Length: 353
Ligand SMILES: *Cc1c(COP(=O)(O)O)cnc(C)c1O
Image (cartoon, rainbow, N blue to C red; front, side, top):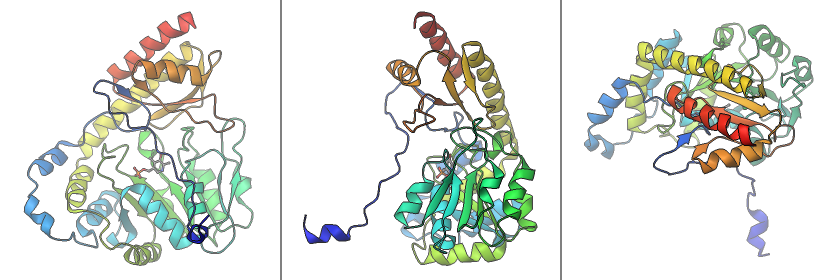
């Protein structure tokens, strides 16, 4: 091995879900929204003046920060925006998890947390979910360098009630607690109001799921002004121009249209509940998902077999090889028509399998 190789920052990268390029497929593998972005987004994109791309974007992202702040009734100094919540979360790890003490998160959770921690040389400890895949709050009482978990959790879809979240925050006043609410709009109650009570709390959300904008890459964090200022200091020390001009313009349109947001998320929730009923009848078991996916296991047929069979039909779902969850499939909620096709195939397949 040449000497320079010993000084490489060697990392085991996060593996995103597959983005197959087939013409006709049913894509239920990366929790995207099956509906297009709000009409205002489409109009703004059509009217976008490419000449403005000569110029750098406005570095404070004021238009988008203001729009998000006004949507939630916050001050603009309480909102940070980034290139998807992945970027926001990475900035948060870099900014706040520097005590040298281990950061706590669940053993089964968003598989990017340990990747950021490893990359940034942040020690961490995972805390096992219980047999029902629920977080045990007592696991988060010990001394630590910070706490992060999604609510609802991914890939289980299971929602933690607000009193338990508050219990974790209240037991961790000396560190930053991050609640990753990527899926909160699909039936959960946000912990956002708690930022007024706890100065160590950050809420992270994204435009990728409930606002149909995964391709645009917009995420945001909300917390008290001091926390937001610290994240911004790190951001400006890393890359001042994170949000491009289209993302700023289209993001404003996406957050503005409350009616369209309500309509599409309601459709997804209804389709999810229909899909649960059908899957149950087919012999699947799963926790009560409050997200835009269902994490299900079949009583008889192994997940890998179903995964491959679905794939041959160009129906894509997600399978994780990780211990404890390797007999589960994570099925994103598509349109009602897509889910009907999916269920119809399973019915036929399970008859013969
Ligand atoms: C999808 C997801 C994210 C990241 O989404 P972005 O597209 O980067 O905004 C973050 N956390 C969880 C738990 C997710 O599932």
